[in-house]
Length: 591
Ligand SMILES: *[C@@H]1O[C@H](CO)[C@@H](O)[C@H](O)[C@H]1NC(C)=O
Ligand SMILES: *[C@@H]1O[C@H](CO)[C@@H](O)[C@H](O)[C@H]1NC(C)=O
Ligand SMILES: *[C@@H]1O[C@H](CO)[C@@H](O)[C@H](O)[C@H]1NC(C)=O
Ligand SMILES: *[C@@H]1O[C@H](CO)[C@@H](O)[C@H](O)[C@H]1NC(C)=O
Ligand SMILES: *[C@@H]1O[C@H](CO)[C@@H](O)[C@H](O)[C@H]1NC(C)=O
Ligand SMILES: *[C@@H]1O[C@H](CO)[C@@H](O)[C@H](O)[C@H]1NC(C)=O
Ligand SMILES: *[C@@H]1O[C@H](CO)[C@@H](O)[C@H](O)[C@H]1NC(C)=O
Ligand SMILES: *[C@@H]1O[C@H](CO)[C@@H](O)[C@H](O)[C@H]1NC(C)=O
Ligand SMILES: *[C@@H]1O[C@H](CO)[C@@H](O)[C@H](O)[C@H]1NC(C)=O
Ligand SMILES: *[C@@H]1O[C@H](CO)[C@@H](O)[C@H](O)[C@H]1NC(C)=O
Ligand SMILES: *[C@@H]1O[C@H](CO)[C@@H](O)[C@H](O)[C@H]1NC(C)=O
Ligand SMILES: *[C@@H]1O[C@H](CO)[C@@H](O)[C@H](O)[C@H]1NC(C)=O
Ligand SMILES: [Cu+2]
Image (cartoon, rainbow, N blue to C red):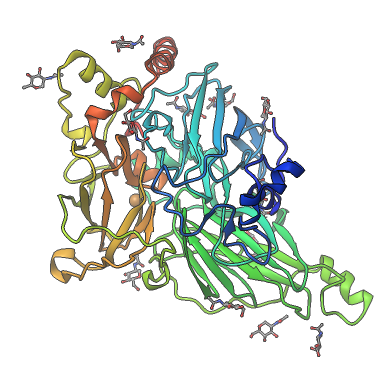
């Protein structure tokens, strides 16, 4: 196992020579004349990255760094108990904690993750959210799409290259297991569009129930009851008012006046949409998902399930010494009983807090903040697209090659099911799409995708695909595409056909999750530049399980040579054996 340092260390070392973080360059390497020209990443110039930079086209595999460094992790998925907010319940952990270990790498490294399923009663599969997986669909970690579930007792190894840099998370894509705790951070060091002194790492914002996600899903789906989440956590912790007794503890972090801190916000929740802020502190937003943007300042930030934003917060000298950090569930699309008590604390170090006496300083170190929230509008709309301007310009074609789709909400009696383009998604754990593609290629008999498998088959390379996602229900939905960033050409309230909005083709926001507003539309574009089987779905946990998904079968004829069939077959054989013996019943969508 490697030892990692979270701070700028990796960045600075790598920019000198292509050496592993923490490994000092030899004097001969430093003496080489061409190395002297290289840009050095430091607190005062985060845009530097050795021979690479913010202008490097990270979609071009030949342009991105190839460090030769391998980051290897061993994840053990287990069943246990924990009390993140002071209320003990069953949780599923990776290496004993929620969140599990953070994957830390430098841009251009290779990441290897060995996942062992040590649970008794569930399969699993780990998805590396937002990671492009170029020519690497088998490592996307989605049971029913790219693999069979990993059976109890089995181990599967995922390997992928960090061609992008920035912040994300990994999570189980089996059933609703992620929201029982099978999740953790991804942090890829690279250049940034604003300077900062310290990288505080990923900060998870997550709604939390005292029942297992499995129980919540059953209620949501079969009793026609809207899910009400009792509370939410900040980085895996919060207090809870347990019938008048406050239990649990709050997330706290320490600022030193004069320093700038980078926070990597991740909404890892099942359904809540959050508005994040730190009282009396403006945030400078530097990236949306894995896409660095031109920085903009805001006092509050809207973040949907699956979305990420990196922010730089300046700790100026403030009287009082401590401030509330807030993750406020947005009632516009979220049902929660705890809107105002999802709080963390930012404390200034005694030496830097502007307090005139030692007693003031002591009290600042322990007392609760008394600060007030910034005013905000309660909505689940994404950040203003005018602010989400990618640093690296990469524009879509003005005309499309393929145009698809529509989504509507359908409620059948007691059972909630969602449809996209008329079908409620239903795929089979034991027969993943990728396996079907291999079978078709091996046998020469094409797969006939069923309506429930909702496959958008895209055989041609480098074509522009436009999708119009329209919802006629009041709820907003975070839409996530695997294997690609997409361009957000338009979004808004009302009917797309009626509004007929202008599409934005000039440096539009680009990312891997975007909100379709309630009773509204989202228009996205992506390029068929990555052969594979890729899921497109609503990231609200219950909706994915209830069939709000479809899949893209991209450039099928190129997939076979990149597949490790032994690995595919062995995972499936172990799953079949387990599923037969234990009579596993799949009732959800399969994703
Ligand atoms: C996780 O646990 C495994 C043993 O189950 C251990 O080998 C590995 O080093 C741990 N990984 C991390 C990142 O803690
Ligand atoms: C976790 O353990 C509980 C209690 O033994 C059991 O009921 C449950 O099925 C287990 N869950 C998984 C996913 O193995
Ligand atoms: C997963 O485990 C939960 C208990 O933790 C159980 O209720 C559920 O049925 C299991 N699901 C599958 C598909 O095995
Ligand atoms: C992807 O794989 C195909 C077939 O193996 C190969 O021809 C192509 O060059 C690869 N593309 C990249 C970007 O690696
Ligand atoms: C949140 O928790 C993760 C995982 O334990 C950790 O890596 C990260 O540094 C924490 N974030 C902050 C801002 O403290
Ligand atoms: C805590 O819960 C109790 C009983 O449920 C209630 O009376 C009290 O007002 C709550 N306190 C706060 C601060 O919300
Ligand atoms: C925080 O901002 C409010 C409103 O601008 C101001 O009244 C207050 O003095 C500030 N508090 C601190 C500790 O800076
Ligand atoms: C954001 O605010 C900080 C502090 O006032 C300032 O230094 C920075 O230049 C601002 N950034 C932008 C993009 O306006
Ligand atoms: C501390 O606060 C006082 C009064 O608000 C102010 O005059 C002084 O400049 C502050 N000191 C620093 C170091 O910010
Ligand atoms: C959400 O906000 C929008 C705009 O303010 C409003 O039109 C819509 O009715 C709200 N939806 C819900 C469910 O509150
Ligand atoms: C798909 O349908 C065609 C035409 O109906 C048929 O010839 C073919 O055998 C089917 N393929 C499979 C894999 O079922
Ligand atoms: C994997 O299984 C398929 C049947 O599903 C078979 O056609 C193929 O030959 C197997 N591949 C290997 C490498 O064993
Ligand atoms: Cu949804």
